[in-house]
Length: 288
Ligand SMILES: [Ca+2]
Image (cartoon, rainbow, N blue to C red; front, side, top):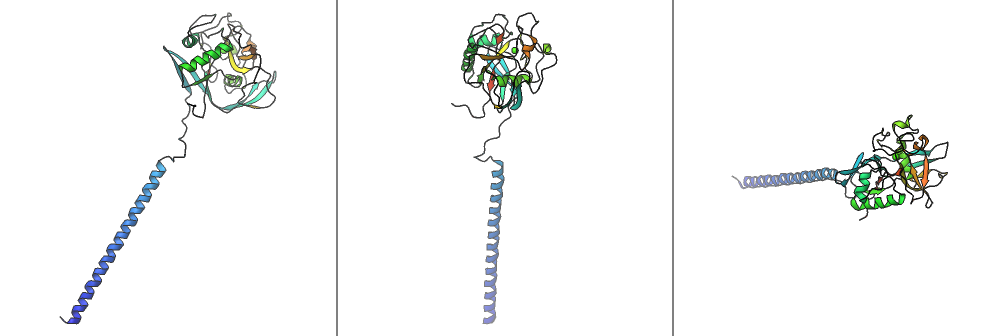
């Protein structure tokens, strides 16, 4: 082999070695890019699956029914009332446009004597019966009952319904009362005594005895309705009498209509006035 031939062979070998190195480098570069691509895709997928830290978790829908355990197999049942708007009162007396922006739970039944006794340890009612509505309780007594109820159950926020909440729930999305209120209400000619709760027809939202049996204390002071539309009204700041709604076994047919308003002093108690509770639903977490 001549010197020139040797030199040419060496050059060819050198060129081949260089080409192999270039091919290897290109392969490594492609491998690196593919790895980065996989990492980016994985990050996008995982990021889309996990909730962002600054986004609140979606709210769970409120259950339609709520049962509060008072102990000793005594419970209190509530029905969900969703936010809405309605006309309070009627043209014959006075009316007011009302919007309720917050959901709330309202008692499916009037508070019974066994429920009151479980919470308060005594039963002041005149017409005795475990399942009869508690009566002969003043508005002031009801506040003591609610305070004791909160001591027993720290989870829920109990209250008397505002007058607007009461009428909203009584109307249950309707603009008129049922044709025959005696199917729904113990009233007038029913012997002048209270009756066990839940025996008549419920209203459209499943509330029993919201017409009749015993009148039901509301939270508000009594006053003529305001002239302007109201949002989440709670009544006047002061007054002399508190509202009681729904008529009773001792009243007349007119009294058990959804629009009928009556009021008594907060310390007064009668055997035809009881109560129905609400559970306040707050969108904000309860303060600790
Ligand atoms: Ca009632």
